[in-house]
Length: 351
Picture: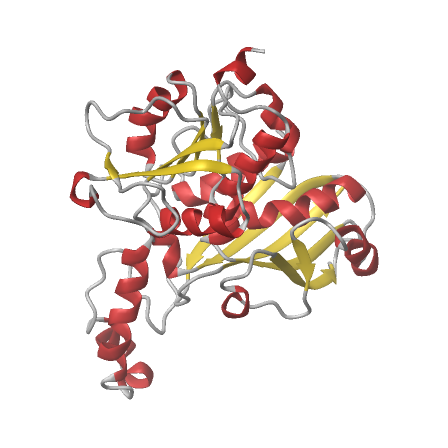
């Protein structure tokens, strides 16, 4: 580890999440002596605000040595190919893709929830899915207080969850549908047909689409499976029962999740509020909305209600910016925790 600061590689630096990672590194004054961006060959040579040198092409023969930490937001395929190379060259990789999340040897970490998982890292750390991420803060607080046993999770996920292309597609559809607003009432199918979706499963503007991701043989999408598997791993609750439904909504940025959580102990709204009050990164808001929390670091929780039929269950509504806490912010926070615990660099791993 360099004496005057850390050398940071940022892989996927020109994408929406990579750009936000660069901003977070500056905003949070991460102790970086150098921040070196990597991206596709077509971006090579670009100068990015906050980087200490122009973009390097992530191509065969790229120099990957000399880094203390490598922050990845380049997709699962590139992560599988390149993360081991950066790791073997001495960096600790914090990966934002799905490539390593369910690897039993890779910690899956939300910085406020299970930072202790980092102590056993072997050079690669995974960042959770953005929807799972938002749920974990309130559920950790509630699990500690009441013993979480089960959750029914229905997500309302922003177009930005599909990247900039998802946002662009949604923006481009509004004009076509509003050109003949009467069709929205009299002939919705014809209105929907005025747009040709390629990113989202159906026309998303002025609509709700109850499918995102690839379906398995049981009819669940990979996005829904992530909610199940990642929640169990992060909370260290392998028997946690999870019933997920993931829905795409016409919001640019910010995922929302309605949770019905069941516990070993009795719970009421007042005691639940008390358990969540002051939890790091979490705020209470009577009516949180994704629009109002776009651009904010905190995860918000509201509509906290005792379940009508079960004294051991609770209903709550969770909102979080999927580009910030759901991706870029947590990645940088993991790097901060690794640094604070002395866990960066090949010498730290070998200790």
